[in-house]
Structure formats: structure tokens, C-alpha cells
Amino acid sequence: MIHSQSFGFASPRPRSDHDRETRTRRSLFCVPKRTLFVAVWLSASAVPAVAQINLYDTDDVAIDIGLDAATATFAQSNPWFGEPEANIGVDTNNWSEFAIEPQLYLTLKNVLGGEVSAGISGVATKTYGESADGFAAGQSDPGKATLEKLHVGWKTDLGGEDYFEIIGGDFDYQIGTGFLIKDGGRDGGDRGGFYLGARSASRSSGLVRLQKDDLLLEGFWLGNNPGRGGIKAHVGGANAEYTFSDRASIGASYIEVAHFDDPVSSDTAEELKTYDFRASARVSDQFTISGEYALQDGAGFYEGQGWYLQGEYTLETVRFEPTLTYRYAIVTGDDPSTPQNEEFVPLAYGFTDYQQWYQGELTGNWIFGNSNQKTHMIKGSAALTDSISVTASWLNFTLDEPGQLAVSDEAFGDELDLILDWQATDRLFVSAVAAVLFPGDGAEQFTGGDDTWSHLMLYASVAF
Image (cartoon, rainbow, N blue to C red; front, side, top):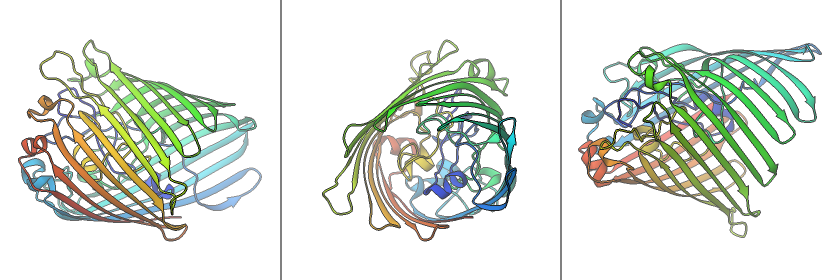
């Protein structure tokens, strides 16, 4: 992702349904950096959340509150393959992050034949120590409190499960698997909390949505939350999804960069267009296949593309009924020998499942930003009890265009991840992660390191 016109990024993810709002992170439009990461963000994620505690409820008015909090502590050996200072400017091995988001929601139940809802929340984040992203290099224990959500919407029931909805302000929004649009705000740097990614809402945004029978239609205008020194941007577009049955669905989206507040890049960035198609089919009770394809063009030189194909099979006759997943994904890089820019621009992707778009606990969170990579992934997951589950995965990474990083070898590395999740109570969620990343020749050439990168993390969150 190192190109003068790139807009990509990378970030962490939530690990339980409680935390998807609090912990998703990363966004869109980026300025190039020495690492494979990004520096500027635009975004979006899921629609306004429902608060978890009701304070007041009548036939006309409801008031709800919520509070999400999360913490993670990290221990790494040989980060950046033993060369962290050369790649991110700091020496990093151990650090901790904290995030909290109080929320308030108001619903007026009888307004013009529908309901008016409004919400407001704030996020405070803090990092102690030097994080492996390097965005806060030189800052001592960065942290900041910021406004997160501030939105109002109107929704009317059209009968059955059909409805029409309008939302405006700062809110979360997601398309499909989160490949293009899901996560909203920028974390890290002076804000701290890079991995937890508590900021997800798009800013100064609008959404119109119609659910009619099996068809969903959406139009959107989404702005970013770039943080101090970041570049403000907006995208506009449309999304359509159709469900044939409980076994098959398809979707299509069009996204265009409508505004990019940077005089150097705006003339070309504002012409970037993305066309996306996706489908999922449950072939049998045990086997599901899904895939997505995104094409990017515009400004006479953009020619990026990204796609994946995935199969999942559940072993129902085996104890714990484990699910095995194979997935192959490509997000193109830029060939420096051509006048075109073939690099895929990752827009505002976010977490929906382990290894989905943060491909690898190490590679996906700290190195790659869903651009210039090819990934094979084999994953196994199982519920050991009603509250404990385990996920293990192997990922192989190669560079689509080694020349973009000024290296000659496409082999970047192999990663092994082991994740243990525990839903301790209805409110408390705990996760433990162990990961190792073995460098390939391409990684050694790019980072200058050849050591095996290992990683331990303990994560906990509460939601009220």
C-alpha cells in the first residue's frame, strides 16, 4: 500500500456481538507511509446501535443508555521481524490499551406515522507503552476523548418486516461482509487505542434505506473522522441486496469518492469509483460457499480489483461439530512499470469474522491494509461449551506486486493463530490470542528483519 495515490488502511476488530460497535476500527483514504499501513481514514459501519438499559418507556417516549468498555494487553517478541525501530521508529514489545463509550438514545414513537430516534455517544481511549503500529511514535501514553455518535433518524413500518428509514449525522454503517464499508474513525496516534479501534462512526453522513419483501435498497453519503492532521473525505453511493431464500443471497454496490479535502490528491481521488458484486449460497446443511468481487476505475488510470472465494463445511458427525473454512483472497498492488495505478484502494473495511478482512492477527492488524496481497487461509472453529469457543487458522501471504515495495520476492510469510473466546457472563467477554508469523524472502527484504514474530494478547470487554 505504498503509492502516492493510495487510500487504504488497516485495523482491529470486535470479538463478540457485544463489542462490534466498541472495538471495530480503521477506515478509508490514506496517505502513504513507510509501513504497509495507512495514515488517513474515512469510514462507516453498522447502523445506530440499540442501547442495553431502558431508563424510561411510555407509549410515546423511550430513553435508553449504554456503556461499552474494553481493554487489551499485548506481549510481542521480535516485532517487525526483529526490526521495529527501522520500520515504525520505536522499539515495541509490551503495551496496553483501554477504551470506553457511554451512550444515550431517545425514541419518539408516534411521529408522522413512524418513530424518530436520536443517539449520542463519546469515546475515550488510552495507550500505555509503544504500540506495534508506530503511529504514536514519540508520544508518551497517548489518549483522547472525542464525540463519537450524534445522529437522528425516522423509521416507518410498511407491514411485516418491511420498513423505510432515513438517518443523518454521525453513525455506523456496514455493507455486506465489511469488505468495502464498515469501520469509521481513526484511532491510534495522539488518540491512542489503535488496536481496540473504538471509533467507528462516519461523520456528517446520511442514509436512506428501504426494506421491501426480500429486497434491500440503500443510498448513502459518508464522511470520515480522520483525527488531528488527517484529510477529510466523503463517499457517496448505493447498495442493493436480495435474498432468494434462507439459502442464497446476492448484493451489489456502487461507491464514488465525492470529496477529498487535499488539493494535491483531490483532482484524481474524487474520480475513484468502485463497483462491487457479492453472493452467498448454502449448498447443503453442512456446506456454504460465498464470494465477492470489487472493480475500481476512474481518473483515466485507476485499475484496481479485489475479490475472494470462500467455502465453509461443518463436520456434524464429529464432537463439537467444528467448522472448516478455506478462503482465497486477492487485493491487487501497483505495477510500477505501468502508467496505470493497479493498487486496490481498501476504502473502509471492518471486522465481521476472524481473518475475514483483518487477515491474520499479526499481518492483518499491524502490516497489511488489504492491498497488494494474495492470501490462502485455512481455519477451524468450534464451540467447546455454550460459552467457550476456539479458532485456529493458518494463512499464507504473497505480494501481488513485489515491485510496489521495491522488493524482488513475492513470498511474504506464513502465520499461525490460536484464539480462545469466553463469554463469561451476559456482560463480560474475554479473549486470549497467540500468534506467530514466519517471514518470507519478500518480508525480509522489505523490513530488513528475519526473525519469527510472536504475539500474545489478552482482551476483555463489558457492555451495559
